[in-house]
Image 1 (cartoon, rainbow, N blue to C red):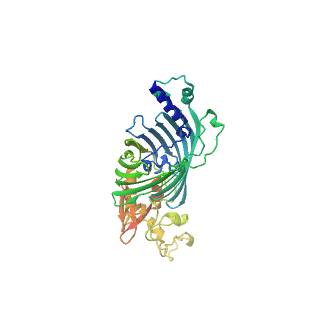
Image 2: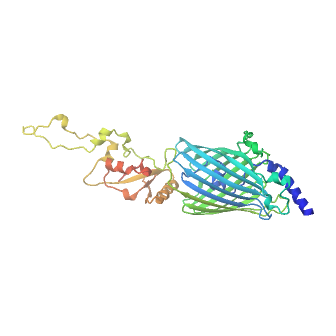
Image 3: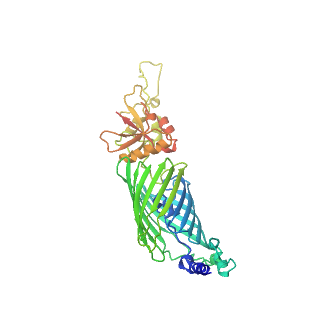
Length: 450
């Protein structure tokens, strides 16, 4: 009898607590930097590919029935600027269960080369209820129990913005747009915007330490409506983007450790949050497992691409855009046989003779056929100031079945990515146009190698 009274007392305190009244309790995620969509709706499909993510988090393993979170999202890249997403999670805390479902639309705006501003808006709903079926020895006919077991319904929404420049990303998000403190059935009629106090700001940067190792520091700060603000900081070391190890610290919670393995487009991550030293009881650690699968076609960058950029080191080679079409048609100069004016049998009007130019234009040289090859042309699909960026493009092209190489021309500051299979002794306009039909090579150009 005493135990039943205690259970009912605990249930009453849980029902009447601010935690239950404020049904929007945004879950914690330790590996958010590998899926920033978890904390910012504008970070949809960050690598311009579609992806699926599944996460399971068991918090406070030292406490029976500790909080658990199951999260799933699908991110679909429509094109180089737009993406759609859906995010679902079920967050269980003792006897309280929160289920959130939200759909997201993301849009990217190119500001300049490699400078991109992204926006994202999510909308959906949140349901909360007390799981009285998990409480033994409770009278299910009790009015208090009946009222608490009913689902509460509220609208849910989030808005985010982020700025990216090459390896840098900075963003901020409002994770609760609607006031869903009202957990009654008529919450639809009483829909109101929240005070926008629940916010998350974050930043991350990838340092290229060498051709094989990278370092990614991350920082985030969360503002909450009850002013229980806290920060998170972490650092991740990666080897060839296949093996990642790192750790961090979450204010008022404690240190964290992260390990991940990538097998082509599949990633598996594990994070462990050490027990908090500030808790009055022994809570135990927290386990978090994340699975990621990326698939589909890589969309073009929403800005002018650096990886497929026609940046010749000298004005000798360039694309046909600077050459009028009329000149291209007559670029292969026709050398007419000399006409002997003393012989009246053949007379060629002056206007029909195509005279050779005194000096060929620089951008005509690459289209001029030659009978005896004196030099070699390589097809350049990307030019970079840094070797690491060139190697990244080589790796990406290999995923599409193209063998590419990085080449640094003597006396040049650029690293060129070219396709050895397209080496040629002569270049024609038809050959260039045929190659540019491929979306990956629409800005490709030929460079003359002496």
